Image (tube, rainbow, N blue to C red; front, top):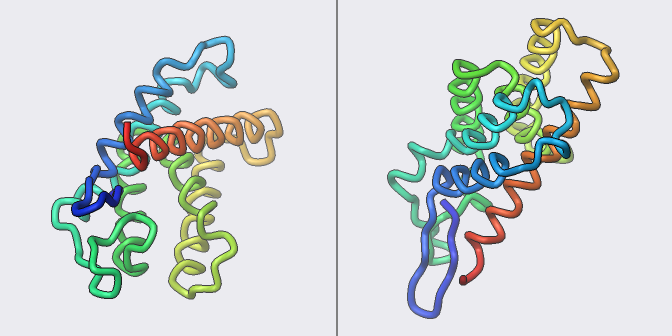
Length: 171
């Protein structure tokens, strides 16, 4: 859940609504600025679906007793959040292997420097998944492909951040 605190209330935006906005931003990206155009549909799908893991979590927001407000995506308890990340990437993989790779890389990038054992375990499992996808796509060690993947992850992050900015601020 994306949480915008107001004077006497909270505006709550589901992660899936935010992801749809991210996808709309990506859908309008000019083709001549799009690296690896042959994967454009998969990249846009990844951007639309990157927060699919939050659909179930957002149906019943949890209350943070300490802060006296609902948990948001930034402070949600680690164990259920990481389990949801895994389920979400699994679901995206049924739609597109390449989109799942981008989502996996996106989520592991948040946790690379974590010392939390659950986060470390999640990243290890996702690195295995990423390696399998690279092998499945026949692109292990292909520098051009790796550059395109990097560009696509950057686009996902840009669209994600722009949408978050819009959701976290008053119009």
